[in-house]
Length: 416
Image (cartoon, rainbow, N blue to C red):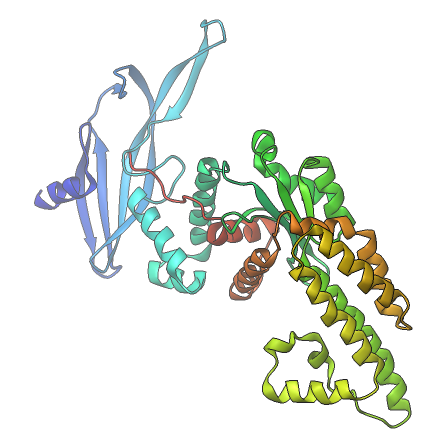
């Protein structure tokens, strides 16, 4: 009896709920708390409406451990009949529903306290696997708890401050499986993840904003993907489109690498291995190179190499982003473009034409100095989630995990 009263107080039970019995299973390291409702043919709702009991259902919930013992709450929960009414207020029949219990949310297999604790452990743990070991949960249960938390968080999410968004892509599975990620550049959070990287995928991702909030978006950062650009024109035609400077840098780096590969092949045929093993020397930011690599790059630049000339166009373009305003940037680009287009370096001429065709999107950077650097940081976090999980069975699980860790959502259940 003392155990029953103790658990009633711990669970905060009030009439008509009470603890009927507490069973300790030493060998199974488990405590089972049996809860019952006072018998009767009617159930008193909180608003005072008396509803007839239609039946009973046996349910179990995982609760916080009692010392080292796994604790289970077991109860027979009444099912009640409730009148159904049409839009004119006329009775149309009866519906049957289970009475809400004070210690758990509907359709949950865990108490409110356990679910809240599990969410904290999952967010703080290095991996979901390690959290499962601490919580003594199967990974499917852990994922279900995360899914419920994400659903609550999305319902509560406030998007009123979203005025700058980023659209980016992220590999999902092996090969060429990609996802489209929509990010809030104001708060550094993931707003939505959609399979594939098509126009329709990007439109779906942007639609998470809702029509009213979408009209408050001032600018969007994206790479020069035609699919993403078309999606923004269709969904946010009023938003300024800013092409990501880091994506531009990547394209310039790829152009340099094409020149290097062609030149390395030609030199190798002549027995010259000057460019052997130098790929990353040309691709990395000089400021991030080690002293050894930087010295090697300087030696390469002193040689009369086509790769060195291509590298010069890439490095010179950095100054574009340092221009004071749109007008100065346009003058700089025109000078850079005229030099690049007159070069004998086909990959550099190709990227120069591409940038010219997208010049207005580049110049928009000087109106809204936004980049997808934050998105790249989120992408790195997504990559860590993928690596830790060692793959996902389906895209839904992938999306849940990303929004759970990177969506900045209010995940926790509210106490009754």
